[in-house]
Image: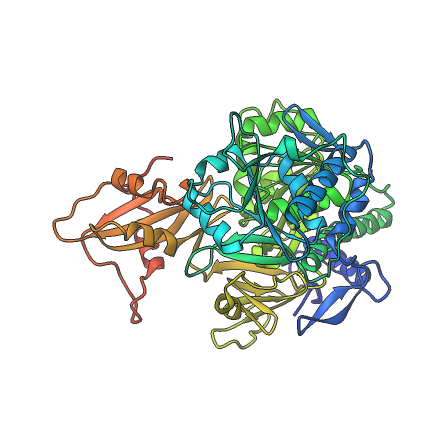
Length: 590
């Protein structure tokens, strides 16, 4: 079953009515000739649903946004940029990249920095040339940054000073442009202010040829084996994610408007262009394609945060009259629990939630009751789907809080058993997704691509079921990945780093529940004969090798072999069930 094609199931009549309203609006908005109508096209050899109204590429979106003039676009601390300000900088940087470095279609340019305005400006300049933006994780250590630069081979890397300092002098990096750096720069490194000339910016972007299935971004993600993989997102995928986000909003608005009319009530007031707080990194698909893209397309204002701080977030919500807060569930929970919540004017907030991990049902209810004029929202997706595969919000989410909503219009979903056979409605299996926003593949890794994408179907590794309404319920993850506050931690990578210690005989890394972050990284370790190690020793070893968020926060030193199955694989669920409830663990520092 795909989309919202099912009939409403039995249950509470009020809930059934709300879901039925949404599903009816879904069908009407996607009918032939409707605003979100689609037809099937051949996309890279796969029959794919494509929106009839889809623009060819994201440069169209930026060119329309860049014409919004003096409307405010970016806010960072005391810095404020209008759309005209940003557009001039984008044009200047784009001409520099083309004229000085010959950047064009098919090339790559890396971005490695905090959520600065320069990240956004760099992104639009790069992608408007037909090049792909390589989004470097700003939490990575020097060796991790250098791996991604070597893997993606960018023509230029645009970094902040902090990222520059992490690179070794012999890293063999590409040409560098550096911003937010005090002091002298190494020879051959360009300073942002010397490259971006706002006063002398050309009147137009350089000409560029861009096809729908050209790469627009390389987003690194952890898989089940090996180092991080560079997921190749495309212009077509980004366009469809943008339209899917718009569809979910319009679908909810249409269903709600009809119900209000039937009740003889006035339609709700349109809040206008969004004012969105962005506490999550732009180097993730959530921050880039699910927040930056729609805010830009709708002429909204984007409030950038240097790092997550709930007190600062509340201050910004009140000062900027924020309408949308999009982050990982941890952030919503910390906002609602913060002692300043009650004394902060949050009446402007219309939606709170996001993705990266599931919102627990209690959090859905808490958001719904805590916001004066707003409601909870969620989206399920992966880097490999360029954003959302499902989404839902407001009263429709409250009606079914254990679901992540219906599949978006141009994406197909199915649940299969271990042999790849479709399972019946309501039964569990692995969730597979197919559509125009599935990535092209993993950069330089055809084996991983072939394993993950079969006949256009992306194997999510998530255990799910599709109910009679066509709505998806995520039950578990088959992939060996811990999602810590929205960050994916690849267990095998952590295990490999710990195995570098001679004292470690066996180690299994897994996730344990955490009230604040959803999950925390944990490790069960068996030492060799007569070996001695402490939690501090593990911390010292991992520091500099892996980003801090990948370090285990809970460690159990066991004096017996770790449990394995017949194939020799660790029984991590058994370990989690046995060890997580215990309190006598070696807890590593933050």
